[in-house]
Amino acid sequence: MPIRMIATDIDLTLLDDRGQLPPTNIEALALAARQGIRVVLATARRREAAQEIAQRLHIPTALVCHNGARVWDERGREIAHHTIDLELAQRIAAMADKRSLPIVFTIDETNFVTAQAANLVGSRTVSTPVSSLELIVRLAPTRILCHGELATRAVDEILGRNSQLKQFRYLRSSGEVYSTVISHNDATKERALEHLCTTWGIQQSEVLAIGDADADVGMLRWAGVGVSLTGSMQQAIEAADWVAPSARFGGVAVAVHRYVLQHQNVRS
Image (cartoon, rainbow, N blue to C red; front, side, top):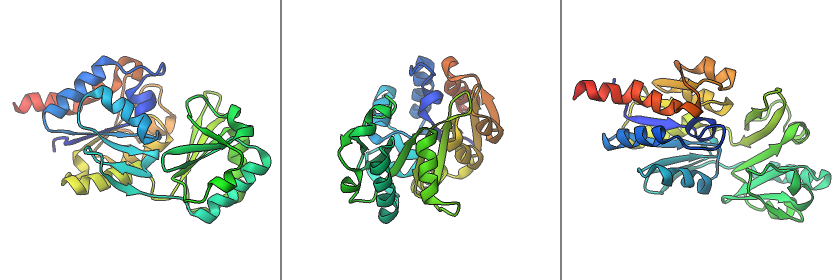
């Protein structure tokens, strides 16, 4: 069955380890879009940061942000938003205040962190320092982002073993936790793609998914074709049907040519 949707992660997948967008990726996705294939960016990023990449592609692009917690179609209409229980979020906020931990709360696309911990948050996370997270968290957050092992363990103590929240952990090459993204249990990339497929009348078997990390494993297994890249996290490689070259060598473009454009050319 031909591919009708391409869903790709952004960081270390569409973009390489230097944050560069290989021109071959732009070209391949543009060719696919011109043939009527839907393109989706499925990412842990906020909407604004994902839109910056979408604009560089110069094609209609749907956005799955916060690993599936919020979804917008290619016209910019929001079609899903899953939030974390407010009472639980406030307990975590109070703990973050007390211990000055680098824990970021995303509320209505704005990241908040305590002023005392702002310097501990990675430079890739654009955050607004505040005097108290407990005072800020009055609306249910879209996600909670823990930077480092200490913050992750502290939140784990509150959540407990039976938490129904979704957690995705990003590791350094040493195996140490770099960051942990916590969101609603339904906030996954595969559920977001399923929602888009229902909206657009596309079958699961007609989806090509490309990713490199823990948060991509579900969509790689769910999609008709799942592709990871050389250098991806081991669990992503194991979940994939095929491993493309690394992001630096345009792995997304290679996958699109292999599973989409090559077949389109044969039919034409």
